[in-house]
Amino acid sequence: MNTSDEIHNAYEVIKNGGIILYPTDTVWGIGCDATNAEAVAKIYKLKQRAETQSMIVLMNGEKMMYNVFKDIPEVAWQIIDLSENPTTLILDKPRNVAPNIISSDNSLGIRIVKEPFCFKLMEKMKKPLVSTSANISGQPTPIAFKDISPEIIKGVDYVVNLHREKIGGKPSTIIKLTNDSQVKVIRK
Image 1 (tube, rainbow, N blue to C red):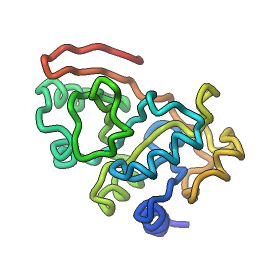
Image 2 (cartoon, rainbow, N blue to C red; image 1 turned 60 degrees about the vertical axis):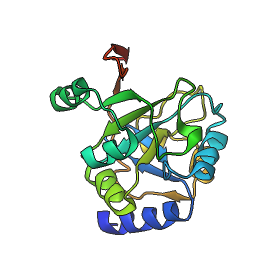
Image 3 (cartoon, rainbow, N blue to C red; image 1 turned 30 degrees about the vertical axis):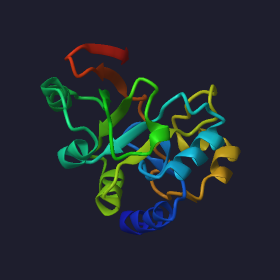
Image 4 (cartoon, helix red, strand yellow; image 1 turned 120 degrees about the vertical axis):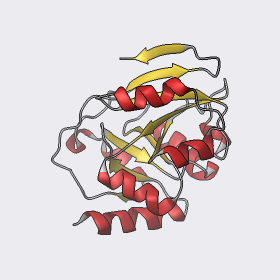
């Protein structure tokens, strides 16, 4: 399988409101179109996760970030530029995304990815991509494809056929930034 075929297949599923299992820049993730509330609800159901536990969204750059956040604190760009490891930023007042992906405090966790599969898929979607670890809520995060439970694999509409041998890194660092410039590290 090659990357462009996989991007095409994943895109067709996502476009029709489906959910996919795919490799990210950290661990394997379950994803969908972040603007489609029904698709987001399917992921919560599959993970047996309460909708109050928000999920993060991947983006492929500045343009997408500004489509979702009107005000982005200057420090956000500094953190993105300086981070050597994948870093998720939680920012205030998202818009243009599914309401059931936004936290109760009106924030959203996002990560800019350069990983070619995710990046190109979003380029085709022209929308952010939900990313949540490929496990039932409360169970350990699988670091490799072989650790993902059959229940998750059967529960998605498409499994991307790339990097199945690769052992994932650890989940991303998470930093919360508020519009009044407070910075809080949630997960190192």
